[in-house]
Structure formats: C-alpha cells, structure tokens
Length: 269
Ligand code: NAI
Ligand code: 15L
Image (cartoon, rainbow, N blue to C red; front, side):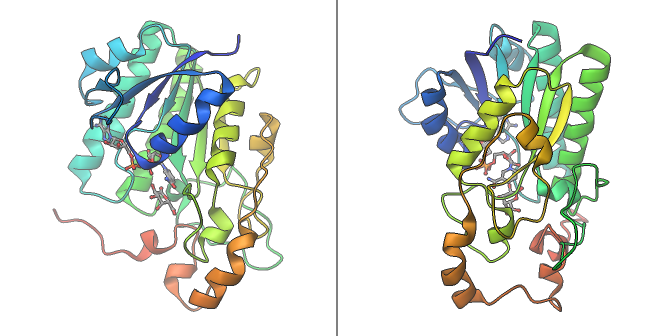
C-alpha cells in the first residue's frame, strides 16, 4: 500500500491523542482530528461522538488511514463501555469499509490479557498468541476490538494493527510500569511503523519500549519495522526506592493487568 498521508486520529483530545498530535506530524502526516471533546486551538477538529454514524462516516471520508484511540480508557459501567468502545468501534470499522479506508491502527490494551500471570524470573515473554483474558469490562471491549479487526480483515480486506498498549505516558510512575511502559517517542515510532509496513492483514503487537523488565514479546512489532529506542530502566532506582520491588504475595502485582484485576467490580450498576 502507498504510504498514508492523511490520517484520521480519533481520541485526539485525550492523553495519548495529545502526545501523538505533537509527534506524528514530524513523520509527514496530515492529521484529521476527531473527538467528542473539543480541542483548544484546533478549530478544524471534528467534534462528534463515535455513536453518530453519519459524523463518523464523514470524518473517515478521504483519509488514507486511521489511528483509533477514542474510547473509554479505564473501567466503567457496561453501558458506557458498550456505547463508546463496542458500538463506537463498530461504527468506525463500518465507516472505513464503506469509504474504502484500507488500514486502521487500533489502540488495544494490555487489559485484553490482564489476567495473564506476569512472567517471573526465567519465564518466557508473553507472546501475542496468548489467549484473551480480560481483567475488566474495559479489557473485554479491547478483546472485542481485536476480534472486530480480524473479522474486517477476513471478510472485507480492511487491515489493522492492534496495538496492546502497556502504559504510554511521559514517564513511568509505578514499578509495574517499568515492565509495560511505552515512551511517547516509541509510541509515535510504533504507530508510524504500523501505518507504513507493507502488508499487515490483522497483526497484533505489544506497545512498549525496549524495557529491561519487559513482560511481553515485541517480535511482531519489530516485524513491522518498529525499533524502540527507550528503556524505562532509567527510572527504576527512583521508583523502586519509593515503592519497593513487586511483591509476589500482593494480588495487585501478580498479573499483567495490575490493579485492574483486583479493583472492585463496577456491577451491578
Ligand atoms: P483518554 O481517556 O485520555 O482519551 C480518550 C479520548 O477518547 C478522550 O479524549 C475522549 O473524549 C474520547 N472519547 C471517548 N469516548 C468517545 C466517543 N464515544 N466518541 C468520541 N470520542 C470519545 O485515553 P488515552 O490514555 O489517551 O488512551 C487512548 C486510547 O489508548 C484509548 O482507547 C485507551 O483505551 C488506549 N490505551 C491507552 C493506554 C495508555 O497508557 N494511555 C494504555 C492502553 C490502551
Ligand atoms: C490502559 O489500558 C489505560 O488506558 C491506561 O490509562 C493505563 O491504565 C494502562 O492501561 C496501564 O495498564 O497502565
């Protein structure tokens, strides 16, 4: 596929969207911004809900590719997750199919596999083929998104890179994040690789930097051309001094989803 130039960035008002608005133009992309929340200083941004099918279809029209970040990014009641993450992501894929957009980069999450035990010393890294084990309704919606992506590839030829993002923030803020952190710079490198790799069909990758304490296998991400340049270890001394090493007896530290696994459930609502 020819290198995409115009890219729809959904969730552009959010934390990751704001970071990517700053970093992706340097790769030559022209971003069309979409979010239900207005963005200060961006009068051309499309302000609409993913549930509005007409607005989504219009936003998708004419773009070369989509980076889909919009959605509820933490645990929430089922109806909230249903509207934004399940119905909203379906609407986006339908619009892409109808408008002939060939590639989507989908912001999945480590919480799609959050119940997976974290590797201990000597254990193998977690492969992308590990079964879905969502730790929340939120994680379940990301598992849905990955399966939706597979369906749209198999049935309609819409390509997706599903990025199971660890934690993408300016800096890691917990000892767990030393294993799962993706620096914003590496995030932009990974999204760029996902947009420009020759043929991706539906590829699942983990979104992390080259962390010394990494829990998962970056082989599929590297096969797209991703070359991470950062390592969270530079923050380890400070974070470990403050918080201590992960405690094998603490259920919040036992599985890759961290405290998402043990948070009180949101139901009944
Ligand atoms: P965020 O919560 O800061 O941003 C999400 C954005 O989506 C918000 O601006 C919100 O207004 C928008 N949005 C929500 N529902 C919408 C709807 N129905 N229609 C239109 N816009 C809607 O989240 P963040 O941190 O920027 O994450 C972006 C994406 O990446 C999310 O899908 C999240 O699940 C995923 N992700 C992020 C991680 C991270 O470390 N930041 C880790 C794993 C996944
Ligand atoms: C996510 O999926 C969330 O969107 C983000 O806010 C972080 O909590 C991240 O996972 C994480 O696991 O640290």
